[in-house]
Each structure stands twice: as structure tokens, then as C-alpha cells.
Image (tube, rainbow, N blue to C red; front, side, top):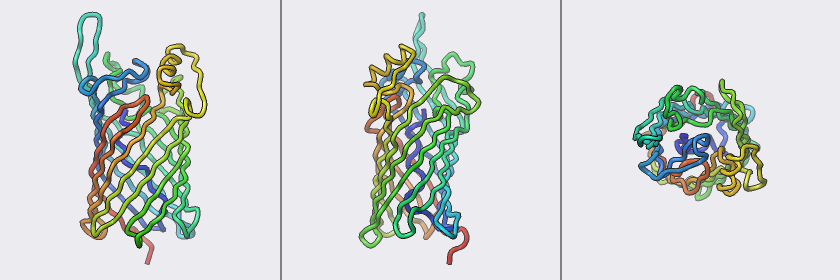
Length: 308
């Protein structure tokens, strides 16, 4: 369920030259204003903040490095560790139980190889891959309150071919970039056999930024919109799932959708070392939580090898 912890898409349209690298270690946090229960337990029911509230942590290492001298090609990757905490109220036939559930797991590793489409302009194509480091079926296994366990994600492989482009202006002191991708949600799970199926969607992102002295300020927006209920309608064999989809305006009750926006900042301590901070606010969501994310990190940007 840690949907709002990822603060930015991998890489950008400026593909790195051979040996050029960016490395960041950071902590991200996400708190819900409304928490969405797992779909198999209520099909998207929500509770107010403070009831079934969710607080997630993610600690990660992110890196991108140019790997080719002949043509700009880079590899970007993020390796996460997650902590999720859910405060819940559960009712049975006798009483109401208030409790908390905390789960520690590796999250969704992200990997994106990227190639520049031209050397003259910042236009690039990348293939984003989401690789789960956990097995959904083993999370809170054996607990009677398993439905309230926060999950790092859906536990399956995603593939997102992405086209990105950007431009700089004001003599390089300001820039803008955007990306659009097709997110293919597979049913390839890690060591889990299930009938769960997801739907594909459109992933978009945009950033504007400016630099003043050792400081960089940015505003970033990201969104994922499912094609179901938007481009076409999907019919479900399970009548309960169909009812949930109908209540949700035809949207798939299992596949998450969201849109967020927020500021980001960097302060360079040296020519290569910088402190980073970000905040994001969910402005729209379906089948997932609305919440607020924030993060802090320390990054290094420079030439690992090669270059002049």
C-alpha cells in the first residue's frame, strides 16, 4: 500500500554521458488522510483519518549512470526498504478491537535502462520495470488481522515504456521536462498463485525548475490513469467485483490510480554533494489512499570515470 512514497520518476530526458553518475540515499514518508483497505476486504472501502490510518516509511538507494561512449545510454535503479504501520478498528460479533499493524519489507525495486533519441536535444526513451522484493502471500501470514497489514505494493511485475523530453531556458538556469508512458500491469507475481488481475494505464509526469546560486527549486506533478473506465469498460465475472466497479464509476477496484503535485528543493554543499527535500500532495485517487508524502536525502552528482 506504499503508493505515495516514491517522490519522483526515475531519471529524466537528459541522458548521461559515459561515466557520469548521480547517487542518492534518502528517507521518504507517507501519511494517509484516508486509508483504502485491500480490495479483497471491502473492495475499496475507506475510513476517515485516525481510523484505519496508514503511515509508511521508505529508505532507499537510487543511482543513475551513463554506460556508453558511442551513444548516450544510462541505467537508473532504486533499491528500497519499507516500513508500514496501520492503525485500525475491527469489529466482530462481540466487540470492536482497536490495534496497529507494522510490517517491515523490501519494497518494489525499480529499474530503467534509457537511451537518448538524439544527441542534440533532450529526448529519450526508457523502459521502466517494477520488480517486487517481497511475496504478498507471506505478509502477516497467520494473523487474524491480516487484512489490515500495510503492503509495499501489489507484488507483481510492471513494465512502463516511457518517452521523455525537456528544454532549458534563461541561459540554462531554468528548465522544464515531461514524460508519458504506457504502464503494463502484468500478473507475474513473485511466488504467488492468484486470480488477481490488473489493468493497464497511462503514466504521465512533468517538472519545472530553476537554479539560483547553490539552490535548485522544482515543482513536480505525476499521475497514473487506468484505461478501464476511461478508454473502455471492463466486465467482471464476480458480481461483487462488478458492483464495486459500478460504484466506482466503472473504475477497476483493484488497480490503483492517483495524481499528485508538490515542491522539491536541492541545496549544494559542495560542487558534487547536495541535500534534497520534497513534499507531495495527492489531489486525486481511486482504489488507493489520498495522503501527503515528504522526503529527505543526500545526493552526489559527478563523473565516476571517463570524461575529460
